[in-house]
Structures are given as structure tokens and as C-alpha cells.
Image (cartoon, rainbow, N blue to C red; front, top):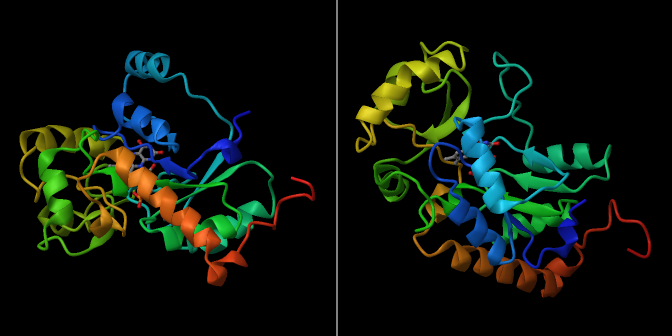
Length: 255
Ligand SMILES: Cc1cc2nc3c(=O)[nH]c(=O)nc-3n(C[C@H](O)[C@H](O)[C@H](O)COP(=O)(O)O)c2cc1C
């Protein structure tokens, strides 16, 4: 089993389907000392097979996704309303029942936030939105631009694009269709695919997936983003005011 404690940088590049996750992005995050994570949503089995063959990454771990995460929220059933339980609390609840490596995810964009989650028992933190504007990400240019555009000033949870709850920048499509959108994934997704393809350059029609930390997403290479976050997490761990927050809750003596 993969040991997350072997990572030089305890940061996971989140899986992000629909273009952003490329084997190149996954490899760049891994090469920078973090953990690259391939997305398989929307992909055919043949495509996934090709990408896995390219990456050869495997692990056994749990990803704990909080309410601030960008993109689709994990739920057991499509009609479920995702929980609003804060990530910190969720992480503690999951840690209480398992020793599996845990990846904390959702809205993470700073070393302070990452450090706090690692101190609560996460083995790594996962960042998705933070990588969306990097050159390696296959994010549509209109999506990249919207993440930095002051006109898009908040994220909301919506079923408007796919029929499943997902966090996106609030745009005209969200305003117009959220109230009417049924819990009917993948049908709503299929219905809006052609629209979104035709409007690839129109940020008011696109599904602009984004977590709450989207204002921190920069345009530097993924390696720089991951290495800087890792360095700041390490610095924070050495700072006396934070050094008491060491990870002890689930470790046995001698580890
Ligand atoms: C553009 C985008 C696409 C995503 N696609 C997937 C996916 O295919 N599979 C998945 O498990 N999570 C997906 N997610 C959710 C991420 O894996 C992760 O939970 C989320 O990015 C973490 O929150 P953050 O974006 O605030 O860092 C996606 C997120 C984004 C932003």
C-alpha cells in the first residue's frame, strides 16, 4: 500500500474531470513531491486505460471531501443533499473509525489551512481549484479567466449543469437554471453537454467548477504551486506558535 508519509510534500492534486486533469498535470504534481490524482469522470474505459498505463499510480486511501470543494460533491445517492458538516469535523469523525491514510479536501488554498488539517489527522491535503489556472491544466481558457475575474464573486452549489450538486462560480446559467434543475444525473449532464461545447468561450454558460479558495489560483507552473505550498507547510510546522499542532491523534508510539 502506498505510504502517504513518504511524500516530500503532503499535498494531493485533486482529480478534476472534463479537461483540467491531464496525465501531464498529474505527473507534474507527483514530480514536485506531491501526489497526482487522475480524474475519470466523463472518460471512456479506453481513455482511462490509456491514462493509467501512462501513470501507473495506485493507492488505498480515503478522500474526505468537505463542503467548500469545487466540482461535484460526493453523495451516496444522486437525490441526496450533500452534508454541510465542516471539513475539520468530518476529518475527525472519519479518523475516529479508520487508520487508512486520509486525504483532506475542499477549499484548501493556503499553508495555514493545510497545516491545520494535517494537524487534525490528515495524511495529505488535496488541492484542485488551486491548480486550475496552471499551464499544465487543461482547463478551458474562459474558465481560467473567470477564476480571476472580479465579476465572478462567489461560488454556489448547483445541479444546473449535470443534475448532481457541484460547486461552481455563480454565473447566468446558474442563476437561470439552478431552481428548476432536477436530481437527474447523468441526464441533465447529457442535455447540457452540447450547450456547453457550443459555449466553450462563454463564461456565463460554462460550468465554472470552483472551490471557495478560487481567488488563490495562480498561473505559475504546477510544480511551483505545489513546491511553495509544501515549503510553507514545512515552515509552519517549524514555527513555535504552530509546533504544538503535531499529528498525534492516530499514530501509535514509535511511528
Ligand atoms: C474542475 C473540477 C473537476 C472535478 N472533477 C472531479 C472528478 O472527476 N472526480 C472527483 O472525484 N472529483 C472531482 N472534482 C472534485 C475534486 O476532486 C476535489 O474534491 C476538489 O477539487 C477539492 O476542492 P478544491 O477544488 O476546493 O480544492 C473536481 C473538481 C474541480 C474543481
